[in-house]
Length: 259
Ligand SMILES: *[C@@H]1O[C@H](CO)[C@@H](O)[C@H](O)[C@H]1NC(C)=O
Ligand SMILES: *[C@@H]1O[C@H](CO)[C@@H](O)[C@H](O)[C@H]1NC(C)=O
Ligand SMILES: *[C@@H]1O[C@H](CO)[C@@H](O)[C@H](O)[C@H]1NC(C)=O
Ligand SMILES: *[C@@H]1O[C@H](CO)[C@@H](O)[C@H](O)[C@H]1NC(C)=O
Image (cartoon, rainbow, N blue to C red; front, side):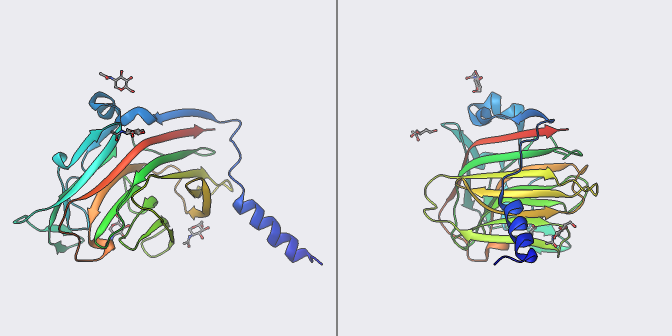
């Protein structure tokens, strides 16, 4: 027999597994259409090359425009071994650079407004070998965190979905990622969670299956960069591959909802 606490548990489970309701009062705007990788003109309308802050981050790849190309409406980043590069500096530490690779970021900064949110969707052929670290992610323009890893692969054979409240308060969910050589789809719904404290609910789907919901503390009103990059080593371990590594992305779509 169900006692009241079972009812509550069942209700909470249902609430957390049901997709977010359509925001009926919300206006819907396509910020980036699925066609943004169709040709250079379309790309240039929505995207810039490299990271918003330049060529380096916290892995062993230095981003270069030539490592990114468009083909058949697909964005392709290629990581290639490179010697005699100056080290990167991150958080006061030097990081040896061993690859040239590709990154792009959305021209538009994305800010969840009160009562609003975004849907992020895309398809990927992403490498999962040790030392390869592709990601489709959001990070704060003014501060870090906020960060939401809409999809990240850290060289473990799995895919990771993560939300950072602080550098140490992180919800990180790794799930199996079969057939990495095939296309997989990711959808992430980011919504102001209500309650008036500016939190967001973040729901992740892989290949149409909901994985889980996470929560971001106070993300409302904070501008975010959207980045698609192929970093190397760093969070995915050392001894990255000698041969070229490709990361392919297509059908990226960003839809904004505003109350
Ligand atoms: C580029 O792609 C966009 C989006 O599909 C399309 O509307 C436009 O006609 C294309 N331009 C060229 C020059 O092919
Ligand atoms: C181009 O992409 C379409 C799907 O978007 C796919 O069906 C087709 O096989 C691709 N063509 C090549 C040459 O890769
Ligand atoms: C982040 O903050 C939200 C809102 O306070 C909370 O619900 C969530 O549990 C926090 N995440 C982690 C990993 O502690
Ligand atoms: C690199 O920085 C990102 C945030 O920009 C963070 O999510 C990631 O954990 C960092 N990894 C390493 C190895 O420093």
